[in-house]
Amino acid sequence: MPLVCELKQPSSIPLEVDTVRLEAIRSQSADQVQATLIQRGNEQLPLADFFDVSGSAADDNEMIWRGDCSKVKLIGSHLSSGRIRVEGNAGMHLGAEMSGGEIEVSGDAGDWVGAEMHGGRVHIHGNAGHLVGAVYRGGRRGMTGGEIFIDGNAGNEIGHTMRRGTIAIGGRSGDAPGFNMIAGSVLLFGEAGIRPGAGMRRGTIVYGEPDAAPEMLPTFKFACEYRPVFLRFLFLQLKAFGFPVPDDCLNASYRRHCGDFLEEGKGEILLRAAV
Image (tube, rainbow, N blue to C red; front, side, top):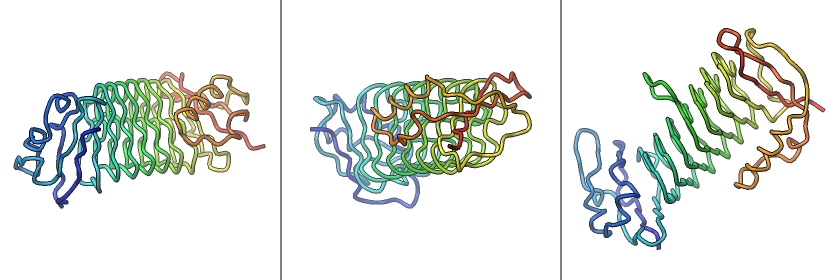
C-alpha cells in the first residue's frame, strides 16, 4: 500500500512541500510524515495541519498526493527513485531538479514543471503552465535529461535552455518553445505559438500538426523535405509510454529548417508537411 497524503484543509497561501521527500518517508511512519514541517508563507507548519497521511511507502516505494493540490508547490522536487502520483491538480515546480523516478498527475500542473530536471519521467494528463523543463532565472542549463509528457496544453518558453531530454506536448503550446535551446527534443502536436527556437544552438523541435505550423524566424533557413527515420522510432516510444501521438505522424514527411543562425545554426525545426 502506498503512502497517501490527502488534502483536508486547502490554503489560499501556497504550501511548499519539498521537505516531504519520498527517499526519506520510506523509512518513516505515517505519524512521522505528518509531523514534517512544510513552508506556508513565512511560517513553518506540520504537514498534518493540511493533509491526512495514511499507509506506508516502505514496500512499494510509492506516494500519492490526493485532492486539489494546485496551491501545493515542489511536489516530487529532487526525486531520485520511486513513483509519485497526484490524484488531482499540482502546483508550481512539480518534479523540479528530479534525477530519477516517475511522477504522474491526473489533472493540471502549474509553471516550471520539471525545471532543471536531470532524469526520470513526468506525465501530466491535463495541462501545464509556462516554462516546462526550463532553466531557472540566472541558471546555466534547463532540463539535462529525462522525459516530460503533457497530454494537454502548455505555456510559453517550453524547454528554455534545455540541454538533453525529451518534452512532448499533446495540445496547444505557447510562444518561444526551445528558446536558447542547447540540445534535446521538443515535440509539439497542437496549436503553435510564435518565435519557435529563438536563439537555439542545437537540438530538435518538431511540429506534428501541419495546419498549426508557425512562421519561421528569418534567422532559420529551409533545408529539405524528408521522412526522418529517427522520428518514427521516437513517436513509437512515446506511444509505448501512453502519450497520445497521432498515427498519421508516423510516416509523414517533414520540412526541415536549420537555425538559429544568430547562434551556431546547428538546431533544427521540423514542420510536418501537408499531404
